Amino acid sequence: MAIPQSSRSRFVIAAVAVLAIAGIGTFGAIRVGASAPEKSAPPLAEVDVATVVPRTVTDWQSYSGRLEAVDKVDVRPLVSGTIVSVGFKDGALVKKGDVLFVIDPRPYQADVDRAAAQLAAAQAADGYAQSDWQRAQRLIGDNAIAKRDYDQKQNAAREASANLKAAAAALEAAQINLGYTRIVAPVSGRVSRAEITVGNVVSAGASAAPLTTLVSVSPIYASFDADEQTYLQYINGARDGRKVPVELGLANEAGYSRSGAIDSVDNRLDASSGTIRVRARFDNADGTLVPGLYARIKVGGGAPHPALLVDDAAINTDQDKKFVFVVDAEGRVSYREVQLGLQHGNQRQIVSGLAGGDRVIVNGTQRVRPGDQVKPHLVAMTGDSQS
Image (cartoon, rainbow, N blue to C red; front, side, top):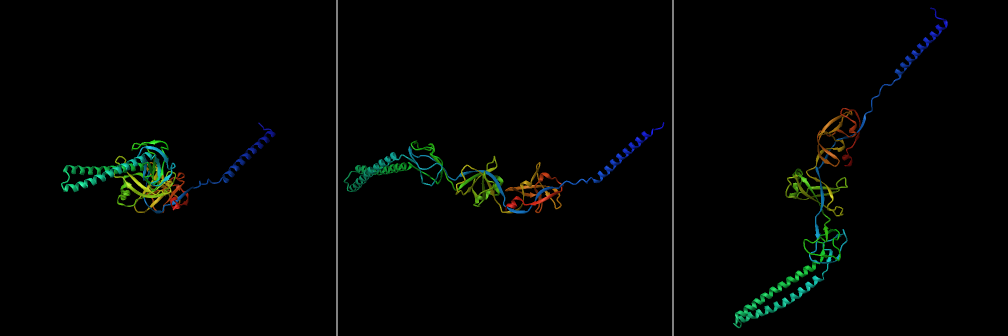
């Protein structure tokens, strides 16, 4: 069948259009493929690395303890009576011998006066008895007095002498009690508040309530429990007179602000805890240290020695192992297991696993894995930068 001329023309035009569209698609595909850039490599992780350098250190062991006063006194009355005066302000510093309280002295002054009068009478009686006996001694030689009378006068002289001593002792006791009405500071230090004030009646005796408490200020003790190894390695030398240095820091201090020395060591080790009680002595001229405060204590010993120190931030934990990341000269990260020693500030001593000159990652360890290539930035160890 013959195709009309008009239909044949429309078919040719449609075929040309399809070929044109296909050509444009192919050309576009070629152009897109030619202009696509190659995929770029990810940037290297940036980390801070520090070089391990040997440093000279002295080993220290850290403990927790409490501050204690060298002298602590509960001030109690030794005689009964009414409080008539309080001679200090609460919390004041006082010197040894300062008057703290006064108990009404009038009854005790009367006792002194009475005892003095009795002493005077005893002295008179003793004087007469002694003279009478001396006369009897002269008369007995001439047989002018009976032996019985002589013995009576001798006995009277002895009784008078004894009565004189008793009267003197009574006067002394009365004077002591009168002195106890003035309650003075037995040591220098800081007083607490007055527990019993003016007008109250107090009773004497060890069971009496304290009038106040008094603690010495300087020096001051810090007591702590040291383990057996520290005692054997460092503290034991204090018994032989060797000075064992210690340092003290308070709860609000990052470091250790005061230096002192071991003052005493207990006479036995507590077998249940494996520790021994130790007391260190510190100067406290400014009075900042107060008995009862929490204290961080470092005990030092041994001769200074070289050691490798690494920031705590560089040390990682893998179950029961400790490790660091080391970066070589090409920037490649490797895993290095280490054995830790004593703490020195915010650094830890490395017993094995590293050598001087190794570069360890101190910041950015969470962004790397062994075998990674990194971009290292050299920084100083915190302890090296502070020294």
